[in-house]
Amino acid sequence: MKPADLCKTSSAWFGQGRGLFSDVVISSRIRLARNAAGFAFLPCLSSEQQQAVLEMFKAALLGLDVDGETFFMDVEQASSVERELLTERHLISRRLAQGSGPRGVVIAGGEAFAAMINEEDHLRMQVLAAGLDLYSCWERINRIDDRIEQQVEYAFDRRYGYLTACPTNLGTGIRVSVMLHLPALKMTGQIDKVLAAARDSDLAVRGLFGEGTEAVGDLFQLSNQVTLGVSEAQVVEDFVSRIVPKIAAYELEARKTLLAKRPQSLDDKIQRALGVLQNACLISSQEALFLLSNVRLGVNLGRIEKVDIATVNDLFMLTQPAHLQLRAGRMLDAEQRDSLRAQILRSRLCTN
Amino acid sequence: MLCQACKERTATIHLTEISNGQRAETHLCQECAQQQGLAVKAQIPLNELLSTLLSVQPETAEPSGKTEPKIPAKTCPECGMSLKRFAKESLLGCPYDYKVFEKELLGLIERSHNGKSRHCGKIPNRIPAEQKKDIVLRQLRRQLDEAVKNEDYERAAHLRDEIKMNE
Image 1 (cartoon, chains in turn orange, blue):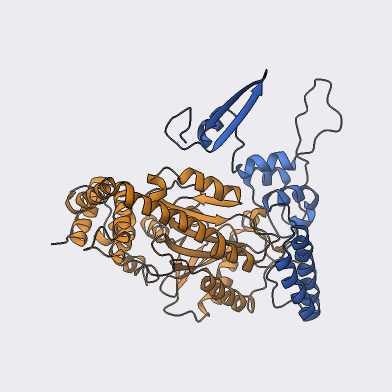
Image 2: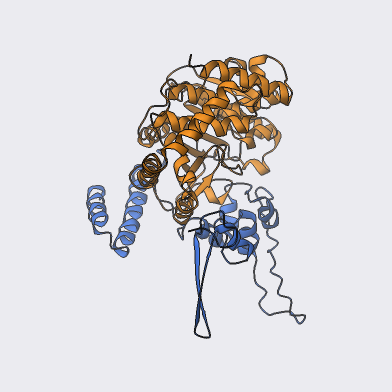
């Protein structure tokens, strides 16, 4: 499997956009941070040792029997556009893309599983699912973690748990996140209040690509900050039975209010978005993201009938810059990208 | 309610001041409150937090009145990581650092994890069964204490059952 093979379709786990609360929750993700015992953490690891860590985890991960094809991508050797593609698909972080030395990612299960080797910790693995599906994410990643542990001894301390390079990930090393689509809270001006409440209960609020990114297209990523002194099951339970249902209820309530009180201004926003996407000849990725967000709201509210959520989800992913360039098979300048993006949007959203 | 300063964003910070018997209310959004130096930053960047927490306050104030906090010059014999470098990069050099810098790190660890400093959760399978049982029981008892303290009796009852099962 090569990055170029990935650029024409969206990730298998993501495509259909089903799952619990799928009109609000785009995706669920659980990540575990682990380090091998007997090795220094990355800041103090020599290049040879870094290579040894890479080989060790690569072998352990490729031996796993996760559903579907399992393959390794060498990030050190990859071109910058290939690294960007992996980032756009949420398979690797910007940190791994921009890092240095021997490093890579093992991908399996139709991209639902990805394990970065030599990022901030030796091993950072994640399981992704559409909608709210954290119980099964935890079950899957926990099982995979058990299997790796049979081959590699992790750095673990009885008092502090799994030892991580940064003390903020110490303990369980777990990061539970949900990607939320909250357009109605934004339109009704309640979003700041909701996000402030989330921050007050120790949650981090980030944009589409995690740490240090702005929220665009009304997409917000919520994740736990505390990893020490709470068990994995408790963190997951908190998201599933408290945090997500509450925020989803607020968002759905705000959508209902908009439909009841301002149906015309809502329809105007939705139909204009669709109109621009169906007719534009040049469109930037920011604008496309913003407009697709409004179209997604329209589809979920039944205000747009001829487009389905799977198409919208597909377009979110496929219109990103590296996806376009790998699809074209060459580097494109900004205007060429905006033109190709508009062309794809026009053809996929054509409702005649 | 809209923020009084920018009149754009929702006000999330509400301030009531009473001076000379006069009551004044101010409603601001997070950003404007921050600009006016009112609100504490919701999430303090890690490096900022680090240098403050790792520093040792000088025992006596210097004559000049300067009490510039100093980060101790300590280095891990295993990996060569120093506290100064850690304060800058916020990443440790090896697992042993947690022992070497234990005293200095504790405040930071508690601060980042809601006051907690002991692991609760998954334990690797390679740890021998007897020891594992011991760790699990200690984890459960600590959670029980906490549940009782928070008057969460439903959870406490559940934890008591779990402790009995593990004993």
